[in-house]
Length: 162
Length: 162
DNA sequence: CACAACTAAGTTGTGCGCAACTCAATGGCG
DNA sequence: CGCCATTGAGTTGCGCACAACTTAGTTGTG
Image: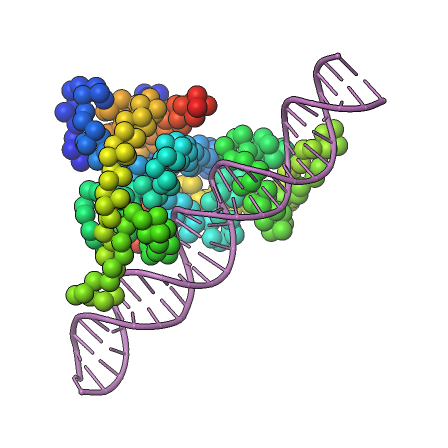
């Protein structure tokens, strides 16, 4: 944990030059970790015929049941430009159905087919392997998740304040 | 946030079901954080005419000087399939030069143009804004980076052990 | 020297992520 | 009621990530 000097967390004291180097590290770490994660899942999910993003969508559906594209997008921070084609692929793979809502004709509700629902059983074994492969303890995972959540939230607010 | 019981970090004691839910959280956190980061940079780098990935490549060049595509790829964990077109775009933007190495004709050395080197000055202000926008302390950033580094390393090894 | 194994870069094809846009349905509001 | 701003999904276009492949140059071995 490098147990930082716990001294001055004062960003403004750090010179631009060093900050650029640090930025390099942080950007890179996050980017690389995200892709390493994706890479692991790509292999683990190959048998299931799912990509990483498709898996995330399936997780939402397994957990929350049928819901409109909008809701899935909010949950995963993805827009229709990403979800529409992805959901079409899941549909043509026979895992989900897409039906126009009767109450609101603008909305398309995504529902699992029997095959899609059944796939959950086969997916249950995946996370254990991944968590083991990370080499992190459960506490570290939870801590990581907490920091990442704050980071995403803060960056989101910074974006809104444009 | 389920604030762990801080007891048993024993993964094998956690049922599949709960693990799937946890996996959802972790996958999503990392994926979302990486993209939120990317989103912030996209806006911050717009003036410089750089994408996030192009910025990462420029950081490597600013820091390490001229080097072959291979070396950049190792540093950023990217292959030629990603780098070749990216570097072509940087070249046509006038930021880098691509020259076949004389010693080894297979190798293409990437070098900054004056314009590319000059861009560093304008980029210096970017990281401060980002770090501020994350809302994290310097220590948290360093800790995060350390965990992510371990995670990437472990996942990389797991991948090699295929 | 000749030939096989390897290596670096580039190419092709697929899917994701996102900005910018279109289109149809909805929900005010005068 | 009629009009218009808003909303949800979809489309288009571009760049990244990566697997699988091609091509050209290099190295090792008999």
